[in-house]
Amino acid sequence: MIVKHRAFGVYQTNCYIISINDKQFIIDPGVGAADWVKNNVTNPVAILNTHGHFDHIWSDCELKKELNLPIYIPKNDVFMLEEDVFNQSQPTCKADILVDGDKEYEIEGIKVKYIFFPGHTPGCSVIEIGESWFSGDFIFENSIGRVDFPYSNPAYMKKSLEKFLKIKYDKKVYTGHGNPTTIKREQKNVPYWLDYL
Image 1 (spheres, rainbow, N blue to C red):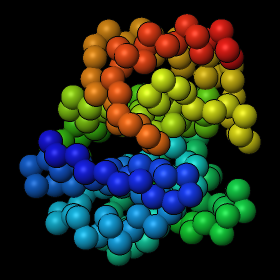
Image 2 (cartoon, rainbow, N blue to C red):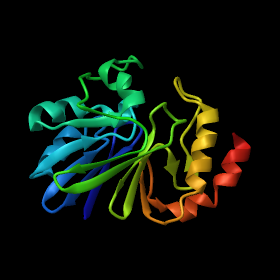
Image 3 (cartoon, rainbow, N blue to C red):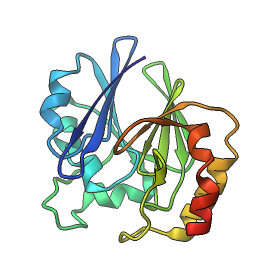
């Protein structure tokens, strides 16, 4: 698996292109990401969104139309793709696959697993492909996603962090903003965040 990434927009949101067996998955194409994505894919198969915030989905609609790709997004966040709920003049369109909770898909022979960690948004999820997690805005290096936004829920975040603590394995975590980390490294910080919330 080859992982390419670049940060886009005012919030420096990480967009990822994952290449496996000459097929590419696009994760969280944000503001201004479309041209970079189009210049770095040869056989894209899907757009995968960790959650619905505009800085993670901004280029979904353009890439869906121009590359004829299905959009996967957590069911509870689909309203953020289909409506400009934050009044950012964000492009809107319909999703193709609404991911409901923990769900595993086989896309072009490749396993893609969604793990549901609501709190930052109602549908916030981690995407697991192979030995890597793409955590969106759930977990960062030494931090967690904010829960003071519209549609955030601190109580759900606490439950998600408790669920995260029960993960037994370790994998590299590619975050929605900033540097990569690992599951085990961030699990050490969870007690602090549980007290904070």
